[in-house]
Structures are given as C-alpha cells and as structure tokens.
Image (cartoon, rainbow, N blue to C red; front, top):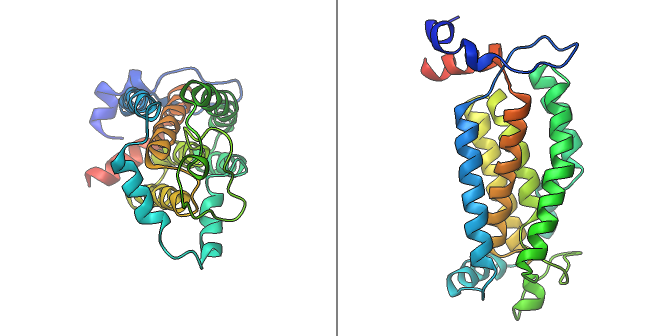
Length: 234
C-alpha cells in the first residue's frame, strides 16, 4: 500500500458501510467535480434548447441524418446500450467489479428515481419537440417517435450513467472504450432522427450527474482504487 494512501487518504476511504459489507470505500474528489460540471452543462444545454433550434445544431444533425440509411440494422445493437434494460445488466457488471451489492443497489435506485424522474421534469420544463415534428425532411429510423419531448435524450442518460459508475473499476483503455460507446450512441440517435445535438449533450450531462451521485453515495472500493491508481502512475 503506497505512502500517499497511508498518510493522506485514510479519511477519504472512511464512510458508511452497510451491514454485511466490510469493504472500505472512497468518496473521490473527481466525482464532486463531475457532479458540478454535469449540473452546469445540463442547465446550460436546457436553457439553449428551450429556445429556437440554432443553425449550427441543425447543420450537425443534417450531416449525420442525411447519410444513406440502408444499414440501419447495424446500429440496433449499439443503441441497446442506452435502453432501460441496460441498467440491470450494468448493475450486475458493477456488482462483479466492485465485489459488493451496495453500489448496484444505489445504481438501480438512482436510475429509477434520479434518472427517470429528473429526465421527466426537465422534459416538461424545456418542452422541445422531436426532430421529426420540428424539422422538415428528417430521415427516421425504425420505430423512432415523432411525438413527445426530446430533451434530454434518455439513451444518453443511461449509457453515460453506466460509463460513469463502471469507469473507476476499469483500466484507462476500457474506460475510453466506454466513452467511445457513448459517442457512438449519440451519433446513432442523430442518424435515426431521434435527437438533435443539444438533446444528446443534455442527456450525457445528466447521466454524469446521476453516475457521480452513485459513486459518491456508494463509494469506490478502496483496494481496487488504489491498485488502479498505482497502475496509472506506473
């Protein structure tokens, strides 16, 4: 165990540990930063999305949505990572990585209460319609709705939330792969005409908020975090 953990990190690892779970955990400063940043970006994106759609946003959307739409089936597996069913799968993976039942329970609760609840509140406040009803000549993918509120993207909330809670337990390379997956989901949602860029940005930022809250409440396994830190430093 490194000297930094012994001298300055001991209090950081201390926190509430549920009965039957004897793993000490960290509340990382990085998660507080991510929480604040996510709230700021969510708010800024919501304010911007509440007005008329800016030309730059339409341009980015058109650049992706106007592409040929023959191989839509290729994107179907990619988009499933942002579906609600991905949450229990992510919880099982988190249980395996953290060797504890506490983080997955917090994840499931936060996804239900904060993710779903906050998304619906924001949708009511912003009230931005789907691209299929607000723009002309939108190429829609299979079963993509044209009615209802579009901000924020639920797919992005899910995939970024899962990436945020899983990343601390993964190597840097695998964590970057999760970020690439989230970017792929964002491009896929524009490709099928489901969302505009600000809606995807707002969903991603809200996913960071929910994921950071999970990390702060559940904590990160101290031994695993120390091992990952030594690996990065080395």
